[in-house]
Image (cartoon, rainbow, N blue to C red; front, side, top):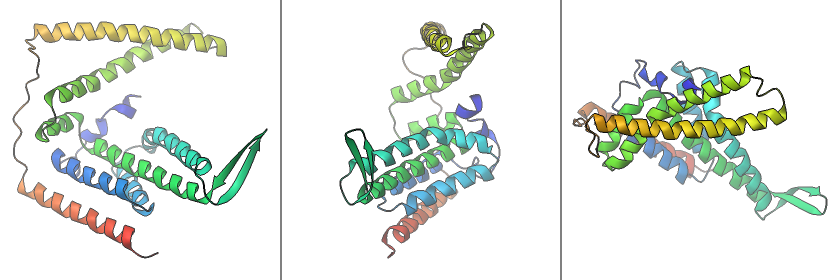
Length: 258
């Protein structure tokens, strides 16, 4: 779970981690915009394959990549199924359940595949960005993009205490397991309820302790942020080159006949 949510892989030294976080965020935003605006599945699939291949090339374990893609894959399956059976069009298959009939349509399947590919392509871009950019650099770059300080402060605290929440959840679950709390379905349901309540209580206690600690350290309603230097000329050139490549790729895959 720690590897699944942390940015530990972003702290390795490679050509992508050495790039300016602002440059990577600009390029990622442009690529996500191109994926969202695409009318064919080619561009989202190309973006997804490139991002996943890059993560594997950088040495990120395949199991971690698959786990991070598991949730969006579930959303994609639901989207495709919903669009296939709820969109009117040319019937391709019918399923009868008692007196209710579901009809899959060609237009619905195409629409579902397009929406699913957009989700996978966009999520893959975000996963790659998180895999090559430490979280603190992303938060620092958000201030350069004029994101309100309050939003950045909340994001910092949420990210910081996500791992504290995971540790507390793991401790409670381990204690329940040693007491055979998950030995049967009935006891498992009861244990999950106790786990949720216990973790929620601990979260409230942690929030109070964190606020008191911040006040003792001179917190006056805002975090101090370090000055943000200008982006290097080389990084600006890299951004222009990457954005030009995205525009060219979008033009080719979206407007090429066929």
